[in-house]
Amino acid sequence: MTSRRKFLRSALLVGAGTSLALTGCSPLDASQEAKSAGRITVGSKGFAESWIMGEMYAQALRELGYEIDLKTNVGSTNIIDTAMMSGQVDIYPEYTGVILQSLAGEDKLQETAEETYQEAKEYEASRGVTILNATPFENKNAVAVTKDFAQKHDLKTMEDLHKVGPFTYTTYPDNVTGQNGYEGIVEFYKLDEMKLKTLSIGLNYAALENGDVQAADVFTTDPQLLRSNFVVLEDTLNIFGFQNVVPVLRNDVADRVGPEVTETLNSIHALLTTEAIQALNGAVAINRLDPSQVARQFLVANNLIEE
Image (cartoon, rainbow, N blue to C red; front, side, top):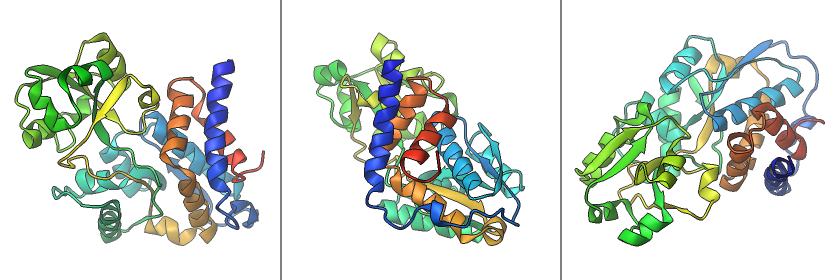
C-alpha cells in the first residue's frame, strides 16, 4: 500500500509542479450553473492512458455542471471514431498521428509534430470535427530491447538490428499490418530475418525479460520504460511519426457547449507532460489503482476540480 501511495503522490506532484505556470486559467473560475446544452458523452479507448484521460475529461466537465455519460473501453480507433461520428460519443482523446494514419489513410511521413497536428486538424475539419490543443507528451510506438541484449549486439538504432541475425519481435495482434506494425518495420528497415510473435498489450515486457522475444513493440509513455533494464532503439527513419494527444469532438457538440469546455480540456492537456503521464499510467497499470481515482487526485492537485 505504501508503494501505491508513493507512486500516485509522484504523479500528482508532477502535475502540480507544471500547473504553477498556468495562472488565470482554472476552470473553477467558470460558471458553475447547470448547462442548457445538456448531456455530454465522453469516450475512451481500451488501455490505461485513454481511460485516465477519459476520466479527466468526464470529471472536469461534470464539475462545470454538465451531465456526463462516460463510455470507457469503447474500442479501437475505427470503432470509437465510428461511435463519435454516429453520435454515440461526443468527445474522446485521440492521437494526431493516428488520425492521419488510421483515419485519413495518410502514408506520407510528417516532419514535425506541428505539421502532424495541423494536417490532422484540417482532415478532421473536413468531416465536421473539431480538435483542441495537443498535449506536450506524445505516445508513439517504439522498439525496445533489454539493456543486456543492446550491449551484446551494440544496438542503438532500429537499423542496428541488422547486426543480430534472426530474432523474434512481438507486438499486439491489431498492430501487425500498417506503417507502425510489424510489416511496416520489416518493409522500411529491411529486417527480413525478424520473426513475429503476437501478444496482448502489457505482456511484452515480461516476454523481453524472460527471453521469449528479443525485441518488442512498446509505447513511449509506458511506465515500465522508467526502469533501467530496457533500451528504446532510435527510429532513424521516423516511421512512427508524431503522436501527441488532442480532444476530438464533433462541430455540433462544440457549437452547443460553452467556451469553458474548450478552456477546461485545454488546461488539462497543458499539464500532461511525458513525466506526468508515465507516472499516472504507472499508478494504474503497475500499482493497480482505479483510473477514476488517479484522474480525480490529479485534477484536485492541479485545482481543476474541488476536493
